Length: 299
Image 1: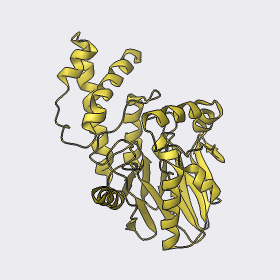
Image 2: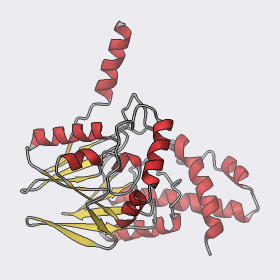
Image 3: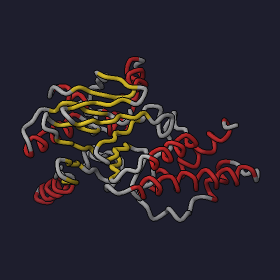
Image 4: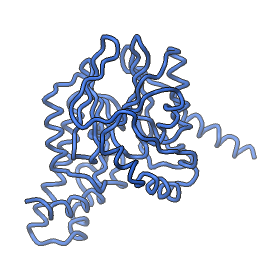
């Protein structure tokens, strides 16, 4: 009994939500580099709170309403101001499934038009049922909610005197990717990861377009890059992600042109210079498989 109590205390400390101050008026909740589990509570992605004179602007909603409510509580400890908007960078569970808690708090949800179509079609409910079975105890209280505002072209959100650019970047990691650009800060969702292997296995992934999107992001010349996973950084975060994508695409293309089958290519690319980075064992070979299939469709 005492050992169990100590374990629970350890888990609560390891996966507690202590907000990190990134710069004046910008705070982040930083998740762990793991797949969702009961132990980490699904806290495996980043969310950001930007404080304006009018209230909070949040980027991404975390994995479930419990985590989202905890994030809201921590933000309001810093400043008891209204949550005005939550901008969802893409439709993956760890960035969207906490949105209902923000709706309850009075926030408006902003997302790509394709995310609303994903919701309206019923596919979001099917995905939710699947992840409930795959990761029991993490998503039990999730209720997908549609965005209040949808975008499919570059727009400016005005909050008082602050101008927040919301820029669709599709197709790339998914067909619902948005970035948020304000005061030299670029919130990229999962289009970038700071020295962490990105996930290229979404059914709507387009790795060629993803590389092009990263080039567009570099041309924005951001001073600070804030990813959906990992630490904040500079433009080198975008370049690191681009280098990995180009590496996988070029290696798979070369081996495919030599006549190797997918299993042979996966074996050949099992060990690479990227092996030391987080989530390699989880995502890398799946990324190889995804790129192999995608190259069949490229002209």
